[in-house]
Amino acid sequence: MPLNTEELTLPVGLTAEALLPAVEDELRLTPFIDVHTHLFMPSLGKLGLWGIDELITYHYLEAELFRANGITPETYFSLSKREQANTIWNTLFVENAPVSEAARGVVAVLDAFGLPVTGDLEEARDFFASQQIGPHITRVLELAGISDVVMTNDPLDAAEAALWEREPARDPRFHPVIRLDRILNKWSEHWSVLSAQGYAVDRDLSGRSIGEVRRFLAQWCARMQPVYMAVSLPDTFACPEDSVRWRLLTEAVLPACREFRLPLSLMIGVRYLVNPRLKLAGDGVGKANLRAVEYLCSNYPENRFLISVLSRENQHELCVYARKFANLMPFGCWWFLNNPSIVEEITRERLEMLGATFIPQHSDARVLEQVIYKWRNTRRTLAPILASTYRVLTEDGRPVTRDEIRRDVHKLFRSNFERFAGLDVK
Image (cartoon, rainbow, N blue to C red):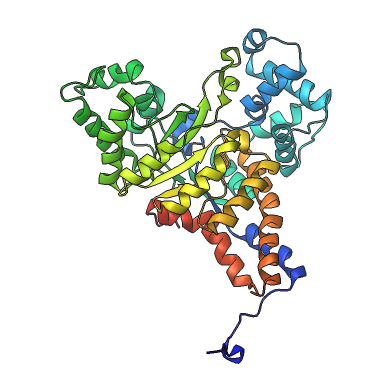
């Protein structure tokens, strides 16, 4: 039977010229959820990093300093924070144009606060020293266009654990995450911390160890109320494997995630300290074997996995796996991938393969004010990508409305995470 085109009611779509402005507006008006950061709610005190000296001594810029300046890492790390910031500023911002992504980000932050982007740092230092952290956080989040921040919280960090045990005041904008790196990746170095706290564990996971790790996780879930658990993994991560990490993962962590209905975030592909002299700036990247992701998604279908992979070469494979497993949510362009040229490539690929069923970006911010430039960059990079996608769809005969654009932006930057994490984030 021939199709009666008169019976079809197509939406009244936007013109090709109207698509980009509409996308830009919706990206600007939608408050994003930053699903992975290293920021802290105000009550966790000095754990939170902020201000101009922290921005400039960020480890991305430290790595760039050692390429542009003959200073040795040993000499640099012997300096005070202020001296380190002055050294980086003079090298990367005065003696060179700050064209790298990380350097340009500092310029964007200074500009957002109306501070000088040339000269010395004294006016910026005076400005940040005059800020009260509560109102300053509110202003920063408003400038960044984000409503919610997901933290990274390590219960085996002595300083942080002590603060949580005092029941710090909660800020509804900040959501905890239990970070598991010390448990899963460095058990031999940290099992004694649990033992000293009264948990019957040992180095070899004998006896009651697994059950006691479960008890530890349950108590911290009750204390923190996390939105997911998370671990950063090396490029050599494989499963199944005969290892302490595998037993902890499959016998303690995954059952705890199921019990408390939490996703597990796996951030895969780090090569730790390829140059240990650089400290935090010394990590590298390696191509991972994503058969491990396939195994976990296939064999643990009741678990949900937030996955971010560090190597550019793993991105297409991750998209393919996401098409096969609904319990896999790709998220973000992490660390070395968070450059506009690579973000554009990865986001286009994800849209083409997954539609709007992924989480395009997170800030990974370690310093509060970084969210300003990281989310500004995301909006600027994503707008032409989404507009181009809608334009092609329009050319192929399907108009796109403003409401549909609003719905997609909301999915990508809010509701996909809310749904996958089982949240009702307001």
